Image (cartoon, rainbow, N blue to C red; front, side, top):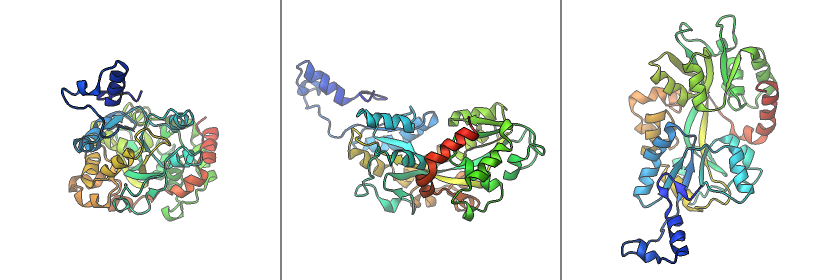
Length: 353
């Protein structure tokens, strides 16, 4: 419920309860008027470590400046956002999303236009400020492998060579990025990736279908590799980086022939905090704050000024570092806006059913 947050009962709920009991607001403030000067903003992300990191990087600075940003780790699934909007019961203000969220929910009228009078386009890498969403960090989809079972660094093509490297492979139960990684492994040049040859990518996965395992959450992708359920996998670079650290290098990964993608802030239609959501997004454009995400989780900064703040020791794990972007493809949001719904369903029907 929106009334209950990580900070306890919201000031809004306390005030309503007091009025219902006939208690004057003045009495609640030890001699001062208790009033909300700025509304609570609920930001929903994907849970786990990201709740703690978003609190430190984004909520604490915004709240110190007089705001009231609360982090909710329950996961902003597209279906949950749409249900809230259609039932006029929106409790979220900002969602940690991606290009497929805009592709799915934009045509349904479920997202607010980003207010670029408040959000600063100059603090966004060119091409990643969309009408219905704005980049908040960068990540990549990459290939990782178990070094205790594979000698040397496998090539992306080896992912589909079961005879050369026996064992199960892991992919996301979603077409996004998986199709691109299959095509890149099959020899398609990054510059020629879009429009995607969907049939070629699906055929590539069908060639190893009996050896595939599927993950739906970042935590699940980590456990499948960590626990030895598969020898190789396609997963988010942030999770691959965490795995490499916690296994002391047993799980390794490469940006080679990976896919660079934006994490995107979206605002559900009719969000309770209104314009305050965009003030929170503007606050989170701070390059220094975005570097905290890189330090803690491996997310690349979305503010171009952030590149100058990246410590030398972190450049290798920064998905948007020039050396890493040089060996990756970049996602085409426009292609997803046009094609995602149909292609996602075909992927489920043929590969992940």
